[in-house]
Image (cartoon, rainbow, N blue to C red; front, side):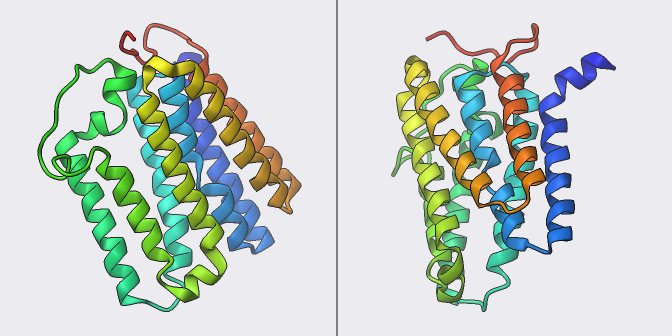
Length: 239
């Protein structure tokens, strides 16, 4: 049992944190608080896996997919509460389709840094959209997030949320360009970025217990991803 908990500690931490936020924000009756507390964890997981990679690759993929789904659900909840804007929806759909196409061409494992952090062999991809742009998923993400701002009713309140999503996607691009050969830079730069994001979100949270839960979750994930615990850890390719 202890081995199972240790292997899946990051997933348990994410699940408990999401439950705590949903319960706490229900008591506070604050959708805004839930959205800000739940929107950015998948970026943190991407950085942890890329920079440290001390968890099994399947655990990382599960964590990342789950927390990205939570983030998308949070954004969708507030976006769909605003009046619909057809131009905004069209741009969002275009960004999502570009992202889906790029992921289908690259493959699920490589989409989640399988080459960089799990030792998958390099593979040159020339099919569309990689024939046009080197990082189509980042472009698709930025287009989809930017498309939400075309809706003025949504943008009036939520532009800072979208702006941070876009900034973190640009940060992911910088991380990918730096690559595993510059891990020291990736670790220091990413650490500073996510420490700043955590401090900002925690300072904006009126509920002290939820702020403490966010800090505890961040620390637990760091310990899971940055400390090698056994032979099943993510296999990083040689630099």
